[in-house]
Length: 368
Image (cartoon, rainbow, N blue to C red; front, side, top):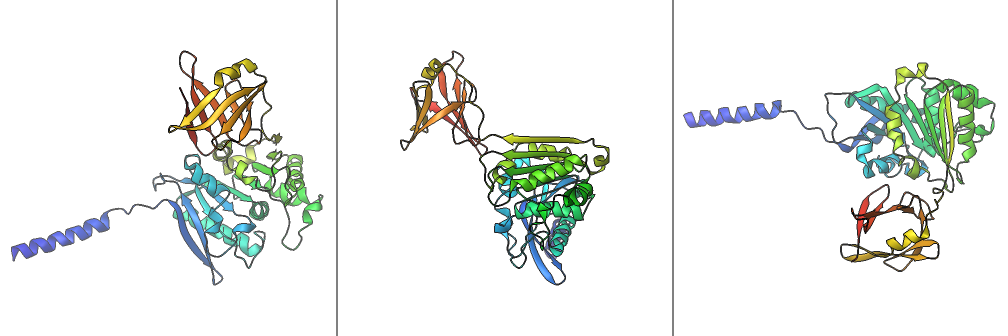
């Protein structure tokens, strides 16, 4: 009898303990849904690994492009900001809300789609302790259009705006951006001095970079806080470069909603070259770099000098010129973020090559 009572009390104690123990919150990409006017909308919210309930968190509303439309609530996590988060989660200490436009709609600028995006944003701010002082809006391509329109339609909601290869129009007026006279009054005045960072590819054949340029000029003329970065040689998928910019998340975090009225007018327009201008290096230095370089005992690069050039042959025999960013760091003529840095020991002997890009880093040891 006593044994049965003891077991019963032990069982009750375990139940109470399990009920009292706080449930650990899942982090990463989480599925969510909301219903508006009888229509179910699925979407995703991202939580950083170190998310906790003891603090408030900055929040980003991300709007996808036309290729990620659907109703499953997943495709919008494949490119752009979500991809950058997967590559470098340490850079993005934000709650990120990723709604999705269904195939039955074509534009984020449709009023019901804008309302759905704001509803998803508000739901996740409430659920995950979002800080309304630090709420940011960004979108790419179709979502870039949506970012401009939502920022205009819902003013005083966002601490910063980041449109990527987008433009301005209403769903029923696709050529409206050509009406230059309407831009300052309807967009620039609505945004005021909301900090805005615009990205566009100089060779974009899908969305004319002139749309972004006109918006930059309109915001500048209205005394806004705006920067415009255009990438030479880049077509429509400038989002790969934009969301890989290490400065971007730091810049976002530095913006605060209540600080906007106190900001002074500032503007910046930059054309980012395909790659840096090569520096002049004494070709004799290249002789010290010549040799085979291994990764896990396999030769992955053979470096050699040819006249005034430094060349590299990869494991399949393809030869590429290495252009000097400085005497020890080189890049490829095709551009991009890939870099090869020659490292040496305390006696100045070359020990290997540090290969790195925006995604990862490797060390190739010099073969003895």
